[in-house]
Amino acid sequence: MKQDTQNQIDVAQLYQGILLDHSRSPRNFGLLTDAQQSVHGRHAKCGDEVTLHLIWSQNDLDPTLEKITFEGQGCAISQASASLMTELLRGKKKSQITNYHQAFKELLHADSSMQTTLSGEILALQSISQFPQRIPCAMLAWNALEQAIDRLHQTNTMK
Image 1 (cartoon, rainbow, N blue to C red):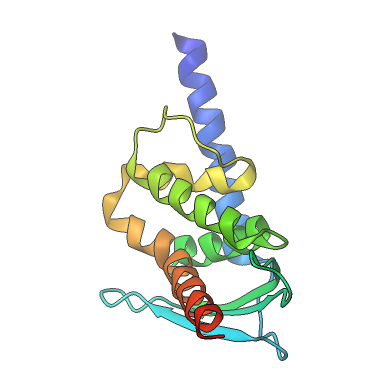
Image 2 (image 1 turned 180 degrees about the vertical axis):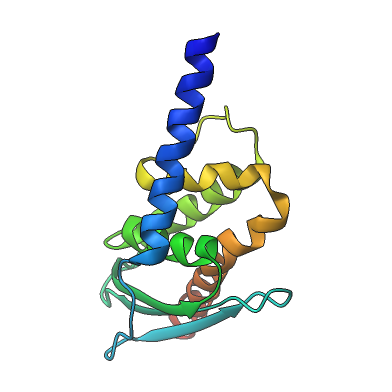
């Protein structure tokens, strides 16, 4: 029992370290000058903001997210989540991204013992499920990405 408690503390410290690292040194941060899409998200209550810049492959029914960057300001969770999301999704197909988006929502709203299709550092955000008021911070970039996918779908259906 004591060993289980120590393992939980170790995992919590590891996850906290990952979140702090990504919030202090965000990956894929900045403007993407040749972006095909830019979408903006804002958390109405706290004022956190994120703008995603994206480049998709052009000749594919299931486009690949070739490049993604973000700019933004806000709490450590919103910025770390955006950084982790860009790391996870670059090079993925739109259909995969849709599945990851759903899995991420379930990760934040479900029991932490639940199995997930997600792996890697993004799991550091799983601890946010214990703080429901912080879930919108973690979802900010993901909700902006959902707007980008909706617009991509609208553009492709108009062709």
